[in-house]
Length: 428
Ligand SMILES: NC(=O)c1ccc[n+]([C@@H]2O[C@H](COP(=O)([O-])OP(=O)(O)OC[C@H]3O[C@@H](n4cnc5c(N)ncnc54)[C@H](OP(=O)(O)O)[C@@H]3O)[C@@H](O)[C@H]2O)c1
Image (cartoon, rainbow, N blue to C red; front, side, top):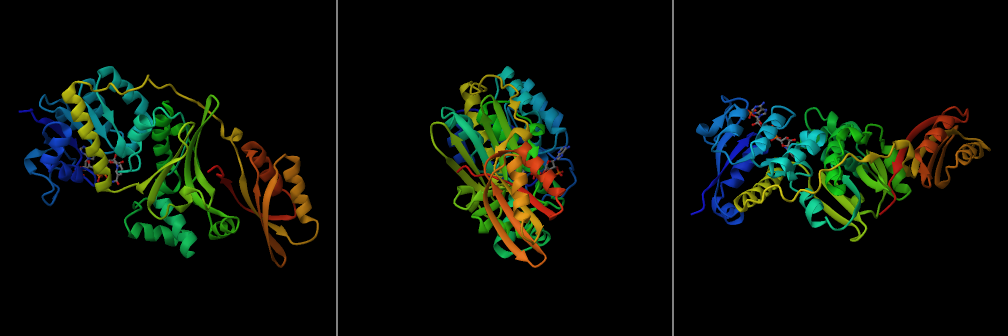
């Protein structure tokens, strides 16, 4: 008989309890993992907490260090979250030659390169499918199935809370505050949703995805970031009139020797596959030299979907461990990419203004665009008596030029208000 491999499960919260449940189907798991798996220890913070029978009490410990070092633990599964003690536990496990499965977005986005290098040196696996998009298969398809396809761009809707808010605003005309409250009521948004709203959650996920896609070590701090706080119902309505949805996009792209990495709200043509992704759903659109566009979509959060990804990784790791081939799928140690500065990024812009409604005003505004070599693709204008709403969509322009246009418009006397400016993602 094949010996059971022992798992140390660090964390028994939203994700951990589902990992425990899924591994309970021993026969199916053993069939896929090439032999039985057994959870031998579970680490929690509070041993006294009532867990409603989620796992047997005698398995619980509050000492991650002891569990990782225990000689009878073969595989470490980290679903505690946070940088520490999770980071130390993972480093210790890898250094001790134990494979690790984690769903820790925060840690992988800040130290993924270092941890993968450590795993490689130790000749063991470090898998992190659950860290982005919960159960949507992304890391493995991108790193393995698409490894030959020369990936050029990854564009994602990576945060369910913000996508839910923007969808409800666009579809039902709800206000931002109202849509956020609804997201919280339905359990999509955290009690403190700041990291969702300001794009930090998406930026962390993008760093992980882009690193996998381009085989580089891109860190969360390399990602330009803007949240959805400034998007109004008016912007959504004008965008729609012009043929666009507005989504919080996470975009990474190779441009020559450089990598562009940015998270911001963006107008997206209504026929783009990501424009159709509604509510709490996530999606990732991958462009490559050799394959054309590929889209992955599904629910990007939740205990059970994330646990499904974690258990998939555990099965992989267990099989490799039995075959003695852990750590062999790693590419060359990734290097830090050259990041394209945001001012040099080239894309169209949506610019919404309030203008004095009298003759000659448009000409003065158009002159500013012309003098900064930013050309206008379309205009919507609505007179409201004294003032007129004017919405411009430009052709491709370097961000630096658009920033100069915005600055000059702000100081024009005929411009009553620079209402908003939003980037446009036009490539399908
Ligand atoms: N929830 C999701 O939808 C989702 C999706 C994708 C990825 N993830 C990632 O999965 C990880 C876990 O998330 P979660 O939602 O399951 O978190 P959670 O519900 O807060 O659970 C965390 C678990 O870890 C334990 N823990 C926390 N700090 C500890 C410490 N210092 N020492 C010992 N035990 C500690 C907690 O113990 P107690 O039970 O005693 O409090 C709890 O059991 C995070 O990295 C998160 O980013 C979550």
